[in-house]
Length: 172
Picture 1: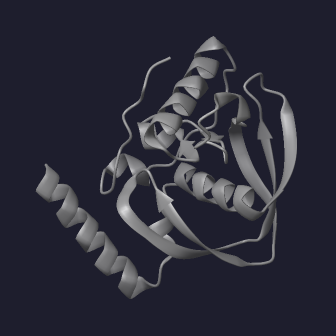
Picture 2 (picture 1 turned 90 degrees about the vertical axis):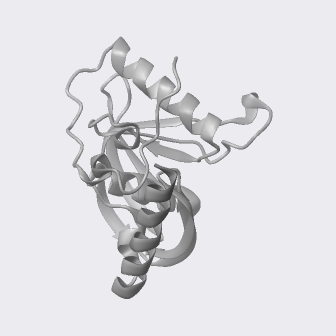
């Protein structure tokens, strides 16, 4: 497996929509494993393929990503995830591997039900709540070209995007 480059705001690839996965093969499994390796290396708990410049509907999540003992990790791979139901509301502080040095409180559904496929192409359903629900919504947003900063009030969005763009330009 190989570490992937994580694209950061304002890279235009982050605004593209990912395409559904139609071929379930060894290459897909290797992509998912590389995504997990990249997520662990970067200290994240979730990663969408689009963040690595791969325009496919693939996300990986491990809420125990920070565990020193790799035996305690719980990696999840979701192919072609789709939210079927949402209920309740919750506010949580979010960050993102593609939006460096910024965190903000975001409103999300408290519970969701998703339909997805595993790396073998088997259809599955999952009811998620708490941090898993938040993380799934955040990563599924990525597949649609949406960043967590897009959920902020308009004035704050403009200020944050301007600051992040300046930061990116200063580093270039």
